[in-house]
Every structure is written in structure tokens, then in C-alpha cells.
Image 1: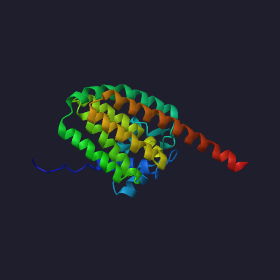
Image 2: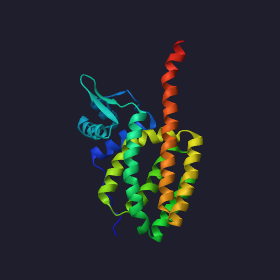
Image 3: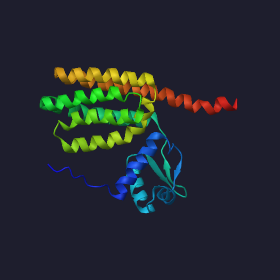
Image 4: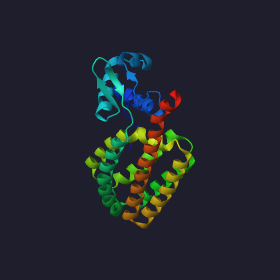
Length: 225
């Protein structure tokens, strides 16, 4: 099989870069994003930047405001609750479909990805990417490409929340332990146990981020007191 890889278009490259800036905080919530200025920074015209921003608007990462242009969306727990609820419904279907179809090579890949998660546990950006690869390796085994496509959109929509959650060493350890149990569920062919671990993770992430956002909202009041 050929190793040829199609190069990214300007729009795809710009979209990937803006996603990274949203994840690492260079584009923080509430910040205005000017396509011309960002295009100059990236060495492209404003056109691919606008195209990328329209995609990100559809995912909820930015909003368009009259007279202000594109603004990075704030992180909101209610938004995360809705995303996770939809994800749970779809991921449950994907897991139940995938488990009977798991082959030895897929299980081996999942086990290798879990080992890789151990290696990058202190690198939040890398851990976020490897975590995603683990779950989508499983989802793709369901052989439902349209379902996987929708799940990718939902995961894209929750990336910034996931990164914020994983900045905590305690949360990273929890994720490590959860994926060990998920891997055991895969080895045992126990779809229910895998789904239960996913649900527990979502519940903890929502509670932890709600506390984080509440603390952040109180900080200005504390400083002015």
C-alpha cells in the first residue's frame, strides 16, 4: 500500500492551528479573533481563516458578534452536560456494536494506546490526543461511519473542556485508572463495564469543571474586596 499522504489545504492547516490555539489557551474565552490579523500571523490570507472560523462556529468554539466579529466562546457547564448526554447516547450504541466485532489486532492496538497514555501522562496536549485515539479506535470497530462522524463533531465540541479537566494531576491519574479498567472490560468482552466507566468519567468531569468554573467566577469579586 502506498504511503502517500495528501497535503493539507490552507484551510485544513489553518483549522488545525486555530484548534491548537484554542486548546492551549492562546485564544482564550472572550477574545476577539480577527481573520486578517490571524491570517498575517499564519502567513495566509483572511479567506482560509474565515472558512476555519465558520467550521469552529458550527462546533460552538467561537461565536460571530455584529460589530465585533468572531469571539472565542466561554466554557459553560450546561453546554458540557448537553454534549456529554448526547455523546453517552451515541457512544453506548457504538460500544455495543463494536464489542462483538473486536478482533485481536484491534484489542492489541487499544492495549498499546493505553501504554502510550502512561508515557504521556504529564503532557496534557499529547494525553488529550492519545485518549481520543483510544476511544475512536474502539468506535470505528462498530463499522458505523456516520455514527463515528457525528461523534467526532461532538468530541471536537468538547475538546477545550477535556483539556481543562486534564490540567489537574489528580484528574489525569483518575483517567489513567479508568482506562486500565476500560482495557480490562475490552479484554473481558464486557461492554456494560466499559460504558459504566465512561459514564463515571463524564459525571466526575462535569462536577470537577463546575467547581473550577465557579471558583474562577468568584475570583474577580475576591480581588476587589
